[in-house]
Amino acid sequence: MDYAFNDEHVLNMAKEGVKIPDWFTKRNNLRIMFASGDWIKYGIPNTQEFSEYDIHTCYPYDDMVEAKNGTGYDFESNVKYIRENHYHSRLICILDVDDVTQMERFIEIFEHKVVEINTIDSNAYRINCKHIALMAEEILQPNGVILRPALCSSDLITHRFECEPRKCTKRTMGGRRKRSKKTQRRRRNLKK
Image (cartoon, rainbow, N blue to C red; front, side, top):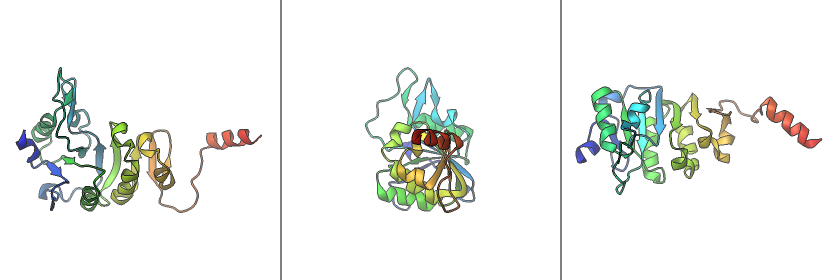
């Protein structure tokens, strides 16, 4: 199992001096899937299920219960899938979003290189919405998007991002958020 944590496709943000491997440095327009990279469901690793994403993040769990009946924690299977099917084109980042130092390292490494942020487990990151919002502002390119409304639920995010049912886009212009026509009608009806 230790070899999986030391694989060249794994970045552990807890380690000082962590950096992108040379084979990944020139990559831009990256897509990140939060809360993936350490779980399998019905025998399929997260990294396979969401293989279109360039970066997968997961918490640094020490006490996770190993998978049973093809579902559960299995970091090793996720690393193995990337190594065998996306050699030198995908990364798994072990990232504790509650740790300020790890978040700073993550931001420094991926600053303005990301075009899409998504999550498969909104509950895992809902508590840390503030951290995700601050990080997103730093790593997203001007046309970058955050998918999944769960990531857009905090005031901090809704003030900085235009939120629609399945998509939040970073605001590049100042001024007040424009409400949808449906919301405008609903507000007018409430005032009557």
